[in-house]
Length: 390
Length: 224
Image 1 (cartoon, chains in turn purple, blue):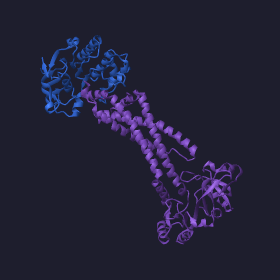
Image 2 (cartoon, chains in turn yellow, red):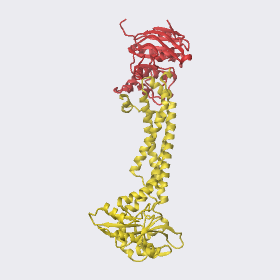
Image 3 (tube, rainbow over the protein chains, first blue to last red):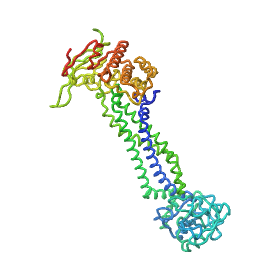
Image 4 (tube, chains in turn orange, blue):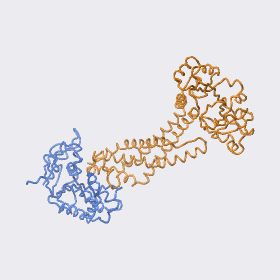
């Protein structure tokens, strides 16, 4: 073990660095390959995060103690339930309020000549607060006026220059399902693959005008507030037992349900598979480079063995080369990824962000990738026979 | 003689292949070499010179008989002990076998790095490069040195850790007569100065005069 430290502690250039940097082209190829694999992994994992992040945007911005849904619903608003069930649930001891949140898909067009886009319409009684969005809570009393809306400024730009108009004129008009509506304020919820093109918020009465009165029977989520000190678990079990056709979820369970749906969703699997492919590509490239490095230097390594170097200390050189390559390849890969993320954010309005935990996990993957390649390539080292050097 | 021999070989046999294909390469070798001696080993190719050299150099495991190097028995030694023995021997190869990615002085420090506690390796390396006449080439890469210069770097590498034993395999084979002579002269001077033993395999008749003793080998047997 004493020998292991010798390459690290000496003042001369480490042998691993000398061997790597002596062949600049080969090192550049290796760095490029690792950077390429990095970008692949970063993109795919970025997409996975985007999906998972998009999935929890809605539940994270709801405010309530318990949430009731149709038990068959795999995610919020996949299935709806009858409003009368919510009233039955509201009778339980400890409940202060049980309010329905309606979620519908409408066709939004900025003016009649434009193509319409699918937009999610959130509707509820504007006298109570169900969102954890200060902008919505502050402005929602305006929604009591018929056909007025709040508009998500993070909606896709195709939905019209509504944010700009609100800033200048404080109101804008558009069409929802061919009915003229008026936008009176903005909020930020965010769009993603998952949330669709855009989001608008309106009152339950406007919702009934546009989607028909019958739409008020189909509740997406019932939002329950309880008196402080109420046993949520007991309440949840009571509701599920006595009101068949309802599933009650705590805030945490609601988020988990959305994430679980995302994890089981084929898209996550596909992107995860893409990331794995990137990893394999990286292993293949680094292996190629390290293998040819060992082959080319085989007589040199045999010489080192002959003058008293142990097989293990030479193995360490290969692993050091791999670790160096991991660091050197990661840097351009990281920089390229930031550029790609920006480009995609501009192109798609989907917010791809470099997160520290993602950066760290990709770095660790890169290190693993290089060390794995080194482990395969170092088999070749055994064929360096010191008896052959004479 | 009361001095311990650097190399002590008794009834050493070695063969390659197995079963019907077994072919003896070394037959009943007995040899003692004492500190400070310069021994030249000659003989036709295939006579077993190189095999003997690799055995003495702890590069191969001993099959039968006794082989003591620097008072350490190599027959039955573990691979760890073999590695340790190698680190106490200076090797000079037919082709210089320098590391292309390292400069002359960095190449020379390689054996010193086996002793992690050693300081000023660079100063030692440059000092010995001066002794072999390459003081002005210390920062050159092997590709930028001539054959003779490379072999002189290899000699510096073999000698830098002050080994008691130097094994050389045709060190002049790749060199012209002038630089070959020069290289052997350097080896002889440094060995004398430092009191180390040299065992050299060579075909080169022009350098036989540096030897204290010449040993001839034929068909795996030593002929004095």
